[in-house]
Length: 472
Ligand code: F6P
Image (cartoon, rainbow, N blue to C red; front, side, top):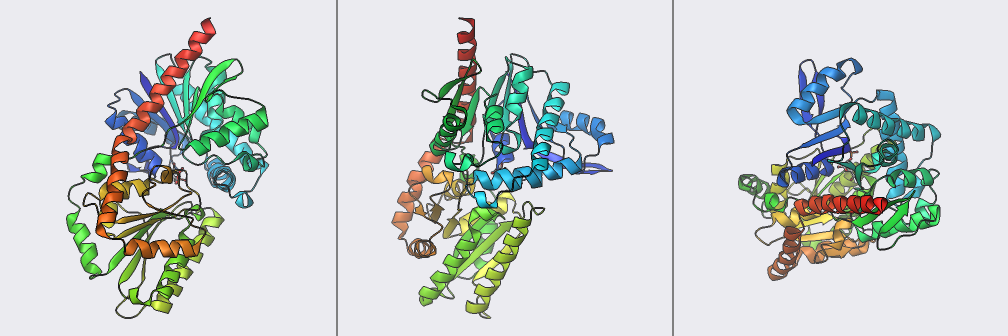
């Protein structure tokens, strides 16, 4: 069976045209699905996505051939102006805050909604012009950028096998109902045979929204829409456990980090710059901890690595300023010639550097206000083969459903977070070990291969059930 993956980002994008150069795309979605394809040994696959801002219309044909032959990637060309309204506008100023249950940050503009429809149509057209959608093809559409595509494709290909997976939360119906285009998005999603979410909570939120807005009821996640059977279910995305657990060649880097910081304990934090990630609260908590526990001053360092993201959206720019001011304030208040309490880095890290930081740390802070899954928490746990280190994890990260042995906190409470930092730094080694051991066992069992395989198996099952019911 052929697999067609469709996502906003391709695993590689055009870096330059003269000479033609490609570069790897960032993000957990890309690396997760790529790893799944490799691990599942899927031989017949192709990935369709946006060609990137360097792709010009006149070069599409040439680049398409190169990308398809070399990387199995089919680029969709989207004019820059539309892409800007689509990505910086509807996706990241409307859907992102709304779906993360921060409706006061969401803006509703008709023109960006129109760009959303247009980009979904461009994706459909690119797909139909370049690939065959036959009985032996599974189409797997990903994430909030493409929620109209399943419905658009269903209209053209009623028999297609279409799966959709959402990588961000689905909000409770009370919040979703505020959305002006709530019907259109639900109807778009219902074009799929299988709609998957990271957690049971998001699945239920979606099913309750269907009932409230479209009056559609389900039985054990199965429902009928326009005479067609489809399924809604939960598939928590896993990681490549083996890779993080047995990565080679990072011990030098790990040692170097530890040595550079003397004998100090290391608290580590790494996120894309995003207001959903709770970076500011994390700083407030570290500040509170240093204020309360004078004895820890000079003995602990917070490495705060912030990965640049969505720099075209105003809210992200102001968040950056806020974080940088707070870092300066903490260092100014508590620091000295011998000790800088917060080491702030604004850059992305290679996998090797990331794992070296995981391994060098005593504590990892993953404290988002809301997060679909958060794979960083899982990667940290997997990388601690030495069974040392403590994970402080927000209860509002999807991964907290699987990582209950972490120190689970409410990130809105600075006091709770500050207390958790203290507990984590002072946790006895035996306790660190027993908590990590249980979490590692779980992550090993449900890794990214299991996640993808279960999704595609379920898609196959529901599509054939749908066909059987139709012929009866
Ligand atoms: O978590 C949702 C998500 O879209 C991921 O799929 C992706 O890795 C991340 O956010 C970064 O998003 P962007 O493509 O906007 O950089």
